[in-house]
Amino acid sequence: MTINATVPMKIVLAVLAGLWILPVKAAELVMMEQDGCVWCERWRAEIGPIYPKTAEGKRAPLRVINIFDPVPDDLRQIRIDRFTPTFVLIDGGVELGRIRGYPGDELFWWLLSNLIKKLPEPAETPADETASKT
Image (cartoon, rainbow, N blue to C red):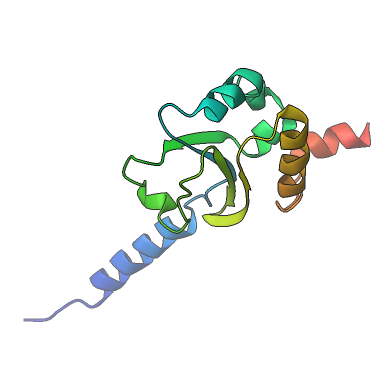
């Protein structure tokens, strides 16, 4: 009986090829909250409705987690803060910085803009390149 060694190699190559095309997790802003958090509610009222429409919200979409719920597997590498709200900017699974508390809308936007500067510049798409040449 002969064992065909190319079959396992084909499987390994197929798996590696599949891993090669997996997308890198995009940036996100994780908001840690808890039930009854007055400052979380204030953030939701003042910033929440407009955040997804802003440049910051498009670069780092919001993801909300409750600090008393089980930690999602993809966030196990970050420290869960017991002070809420806490905002953590994550890119590719790596924490770039955090904002502890909600200091009001103006200071929040200023602090967030400083965090967003830590993100790599987005790559231009072909549509962007065409628009910039006209």
